[in-house]
Image (cartoon, rainbow, N blue to C red; front, side, top):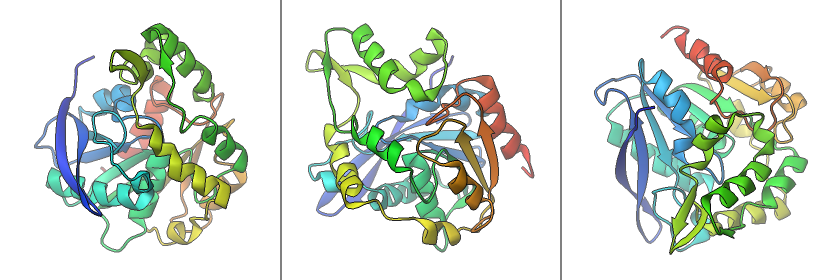
Length: 285
């Protein structure tokens, strides 16, 4: 597997500036851009497998949202919220120098895309929501809240990878080589100790929303007009089948694909999952 280029863009938040890191695959002059945005505690390197494959046709850009991976951490944890992420992605798209992008968002990354696509003048041409929707199942919310703010330390990379396997069981089956894509840039050394590659404060606003009952995003979803694909893990505890089916009937009237044997969320590492995205993006391109 080849390596992507690491780049940075400076973004604004109330009271200051921060750097957003992003990983870029393919021809930097290709006007066809696919933006891949990760989940709550993850990083842009989650998309290595699908990014390398699709980089033959697209310039694939995978940001580390603030507080994760190579991006800056911010002092105020309440900035780790969708409106700030949307603003950062608007700045990122402007840096890329294109008028429109295709968007693949997993979980939180899908919520960012949903929020952006609901705004007038947004740059999203086609939207792919990976195991996320306007309503989130409380069972899945509780599960994610149980580890979102945890920041454990480990004696070795292998110990950290094993812990990651435990909390990522819903991702579905992966070979050791496939799982290493998820762990090699996620279990890292910091101050001489092995840990996960995110600011533990990212869980603060998530837990506050969880206890206050996360608001519905149906009004934003209903405002979306771009072609939309919803991918659901068959065993998902975050996106219920009822919500997914309702997403095909309102707003952009999304196309729905359900992946067997997977919970929250499909990783787009196995070939059959990559092919779902590849086929969708091939339509009309």
